[in-house]
Image (cartoon, rainbow, N blue to C red; front, side, top):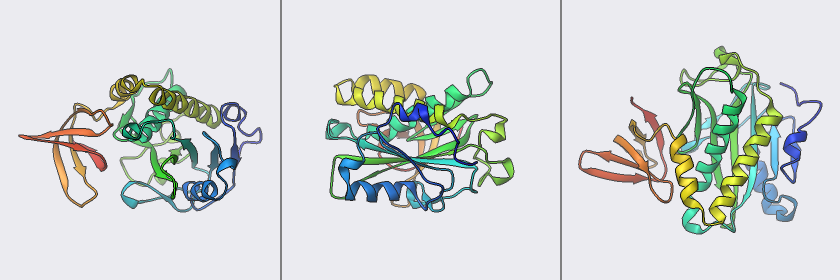
Length: 260
């Protein structure tokens, strides 16, 4: 998938900086380094985009790679300085919710469910079409880089696991410019709500989108242990609350499997 000749005009209308590169190891690593070196040059909602990311990373430090031209990788700069510290756990979830809605808009009029899997994977009919990773810029508590990888033209044969999907695999075309413009717009709206004291609205919006809530789940935790139970709700900081018998645990990070 070559870089569109027309560029990304819709995206440029809602972002102060849209930089496109033909290939890179990691858009997140590039943007983290760029922001650290020149904060003023990368204002809030600036983007770096590529269709050929060679060494992307996912949760739990897993690698994320795709054949060139089959996926779009994008990293966005988030100025979190106006978001209260207690609410910043919602930022990755807000990105997931914004992308869920952006993917859903691409598939409007088609059958199939577009849902958010906690904390920020986007699913289409249960298959993962997008993963998201948020990282703080070293040396600051106020700048976060959110990377997303969306499977666009990846064939079924190229899908890395049976639980993945892509626009091409479900017979759909992806308008990348519209997708990214919708994503940035949705993310901006949710961040503005968090900054403006409307966190209850953000909480409700994300919980409604989240397919994990109400499901039996197994969560692989960062310390190597697992937790199995029913995901009942999201708490006030965005953590997933899991009930396992008499044990109730709020999970802030982990890899979730929907059992049923």
